Length: 144
Image (cartoon, rainbow, N blue to C red; front, side):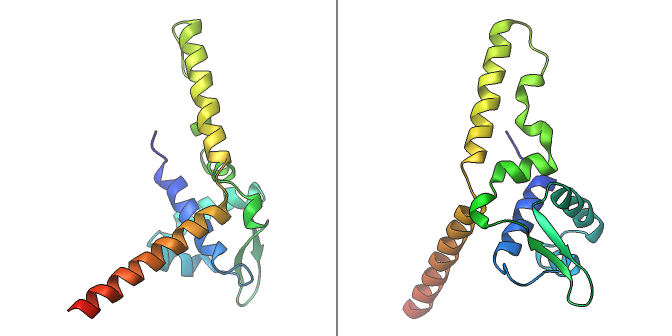
């Protein structure tokens, strides 16, 4: 299974919002840092807002904020907001009841897995990877 680019961009954007939970981030800023077109981000954030994952802040310095605690938002929430059909494998035309049972089982497993990963966990993992990269860069500089 491959997540759509739209879903991947939504997850990346949500992670960026998670990194500054008290400060709103404009779509212009996200467009620049994530290298995503502004119109594409507008579509993504309309879906995220509709699903109550982000709140918009109007006026100067406005933008978007995460609408819930990071522990309360799962990857499944983001996927369903952006690409709801990804978690519905069971709707594929099945030739037999065995095929339907397999697709139902797969759909349930995918959803359960995505629902088990919170935005908070993704943020922690991202932080660890950045720390490792920084340590590797500083040790390779020290060796040279």
